[in-house]
Length: 197
Image (tube, rainbow, N blue to C red; front, side, top):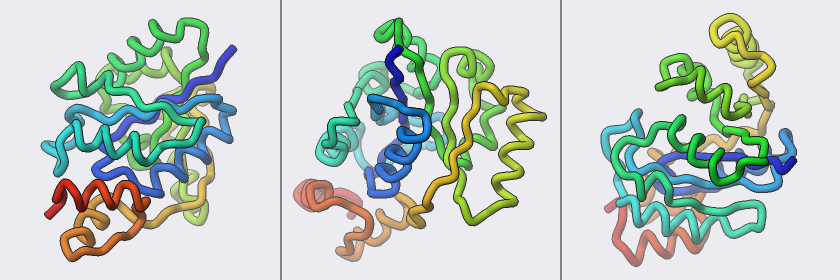
C-alpha cells in the first residue's frame, strides 16, 4: 500500500524549516510522496501577507524534489480550510493509499479543538514533530495523545532537528531586505513581486 503524506499550512512564505520538517517526518513514516497544500485561509489565522496564488507559486518554486507534489485543492475550494474536508478529498483521489498528516508540536497540542478531529484520526495517522532538546515537551505530547486524544495507535511523535525560525521572523527580515531561511528562487520571486514590504 502506497504511503502518502499531507502537509498543509499557510506557507507564507515557504522556508527551509518547512522542508526540513517534511523530509524528517517522511523518513519516519516511510511516505513515498508528500503533498504540500497551501491553505486558502487557515481557520487559525485571519489573513496572510501574500495572496493564495503567490503562496502556491512559491511552494512550486521551493518544493522541487521528487518527494514532493503541490496541490491547490484548498485554494480552489476557497474560504476557511478544514483538514477533514481535504483528507476526505485525498481519500477519494488515492483510495488505496495509507494517509499520513504532518504537523508541528504546537498544532498537536490544540488538536482536540480542531473541527471533526475524531474523523481526521480515522482518515489519517498523524505524524508530529517534537523539538528533540525539550524532553518535557515530548512527555507533554505523549501524555496528551494518550489521555486527551486516546489515540496512541494513530499518532507518531517524531523527534526532529529544530529549525529555529518562523515565517513571522522571515517576513520581518524581508522588510529590511534580509534573506533568512529562504531559497534563492523564493527570495527572487518575493523581490520581483514586492511581497512583504
